[in-house]
Every structure is written in C-alpha cells, then in structure tokens.
Length: 289
Ligand SMILES: Nc1ncnc2c1ncn2[C@@H]1O[C@H](COP(=O)(O)OP(=O)(O)OP(=O)(O)O)[C@@H](O)[C@H]1O
Ligand SMILES: Cc1ncc(CO)c(N)n1
Image (cartoon, rainbow, N blue to C red):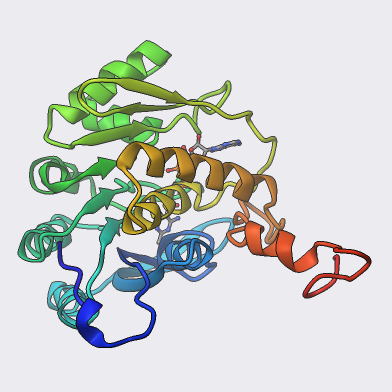
C-alpha cells in the first residue's frame, strides 16, 4: 500500500483516496463526482485527470485526452507526498492511458477499484473500442474490485446478460480474468436494480427498490467512489460494497433535479439532512429548503 504520512506530525491523519478519471464539466460524473463522494464520506480526495470532457446532463460535446506523461506525473506527485489508502479508475479513454495507469498501480502497489467506464448515460463513448483488450489484460489482474454495469459486463464477457443467473455467470468469468471481487451492477436492467457481488466463493445479491427518476448521471462513478472511500476507511470489501449500495440508493432518491437531461445525484445527502433538520424548533444549519 502506498499510504504514507502517519509520520507527518499532523494532529489528525484522515484516510485518503485517489481517483484516476476524466473531468465532467457538468460535475455529475467523473473526477467531480468522485471527489464529492470522498468528501461526503469524510475521506481526503486526490485526483489524477486522464481526460477533459465538455459535458452536461444531456450529452458529451467534446473530449481531450491528456498526455500520458502528465497523467503519470499527477499520480506520482500525490503519492510520493500524500499517499492513498485506496484508489479507483474511471474514464481511461485509450490503451496507452490504461497501460500507463497499470504501470503506476504496480509501482505504488495501490489497492484498486476499477469502474470500467465505456459510455456516458447519454450514450457517448468514453473508451476507444480497441482499449477493451488492454483493460482486460493489463488492468483487471491488478484490481481488488471491479464494478461493470450490464453493457460493460456484456462487452467484458462477450455475450448477452439477461437474467440473474447470467449476471452470476458473468461475475464468475470476470473473476477468472484476475479480479478479486466483482460487482455486476443491475442499474440498466428493467426490474429492480439488483447488483451481484462475487468474491470467488460466495455470491451476494445487493437489492434496492428502483427509484423512478431521470437523474442517474454519474451513479456508477459515485458507487465505485463510495466503495473506494469505505475501503480507505478500513472496511472489508463486502461491507464497503454494501455501504456503497446504501449510499448510492439514497443519493439517487435525493437527486436535486439539475439540468434538462440525466441530472446528477445528491452526494451530500447525509449533510443535507443534518443541515436542514429541525431540532427543537431550530432550523438546522441552513434552514429547511
Ligand atoms: N433507478 C435506480 N434506482 C435505484 N438504484 C439504481 C437506479 N439506477 C441505478 N441504480 C444503482 O446505482 C448503482 C450504479 O448503477 P448503474 O448501472 O446505473 O451504473 P452506471 O451505468 O455505471 O452509471 P454511470 O455510467 O452513469 O456512471 C448500482 O448500485 C445500481 O443498482
Ligand atoms: C468524465 C466522465 N466519466 C465517467 C462518466 C460515466 O458516467 C461520464 N459521463 N463522464
């Protein structure tokens, strides 16, 4: 693990997490969603930006990949000084970026959560099609946890996933690629959003009600960032995944309804409750809205 800093002499040493992902100018997904999730779960967030997107709740209008050397330099800069208890990847865009990130994960011996981002909710591609092989062969064997949605899992296993048993079989096959813990997310299914967790031995179904909403932009980023934050806080993987499921469900339920397309979720729902709660007649920190 690359965590350093306990020796820094700070009075309070907080858990740290690193996100290696793309920037979403609409701030519902990507680096921005990850950092908000880390902050909401009281983990100090670090970032290495892989690509910059011009994006809102409707569409991705443009994307620009950063040079590989600059991505490596961001990772080295934060880890040699600050350190991270866990890291996650999001948008990686190209085979060259995947290769570079895999090199840094090995160099710093990072505990890694991979969100194998391929498309935005709007349908726009965020990963080149020739990058899937690099993802499978280079990054997946380094991952402690992977969180594919149904279309991503279908691409990773090369076949359709229609039933709960298909999700279990996909999790088995992705585990065989070298990932220790697999969560196949059911957000894209038509029924209840059941996520299937597999650790190589046991399956756990993570269930929740489907919330009827258009505001699901960045749900995958937020879910994987919450897993990363809870790992950084020292939870075992299964508990981190269960905690992240509770966090994302409430974040979707309390989505603020921003924008004209798929809006963001509410990352700070716990704080919002505290801030607006009426206690013995007081109006909380900011008053009820
Ligand atoms: N309408 C919903 N109601 C409740 N939970 C949901 C809903 N949609 C998604 N989820 C949950 O949110 C989490 C993220 O799942 P999802 O499949 O939407 O990710 P994703 O497609 O990777 O997201 P994105 O690409 O927009 O970041 C999962 O735990 C899933 O079950
Ligand atoms: C930058 C970025 N990363 C990930 C996603 C997936 O939601 C997105 N829409 N944008």
